[in-house]
Length: 111
Length: 114
Picture (cartoon, each protein chain N blue to C red):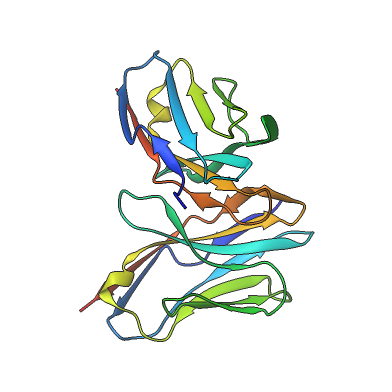
């Protein structure tokens, strides 16, 4: 079974731009969660989607949004990028129960 | 809300020595507990998990962790480490009723020296 696939792996943007990250979960998994990892704040939960509905949301500003498609693939969008948005963004999929499986992440650099 | 505290930010140890990475959690309701490992420029790999049942859980590469409900701890141990175990280790907790949202500790960098 293929694992969680995140694209792209690396991304460079400038302040004020917007960015979209993609996550393809493990086949059959209906839950997709997103996390931001930075040296200063560690791993922080962004949101979770289950069957195309946002089920959980973390404490991030409205510039961070996401969606999930009927095939469970998920996208995360960040608008009006700030320098502080530079981070490793991790996606995790789960069949809907207890265990999350993580992708390799997308490293976003904002200049 | 749940929280996780990893008591050591860095743990240096010599090859073939035992190691313990400490993790305490706080939650007023039932939780699942996890240890993940992260190698440079990679995502998180699940090392082991406690969902229910036996409080001692083991991984295929020699790590084990014990869930201690009274002390709210989930320490990770290995009796003999290898150079290849050098990595960052994260303890995480999620609520049984809301498993799609995990809370992570700040991580422990394990450095195994020859």
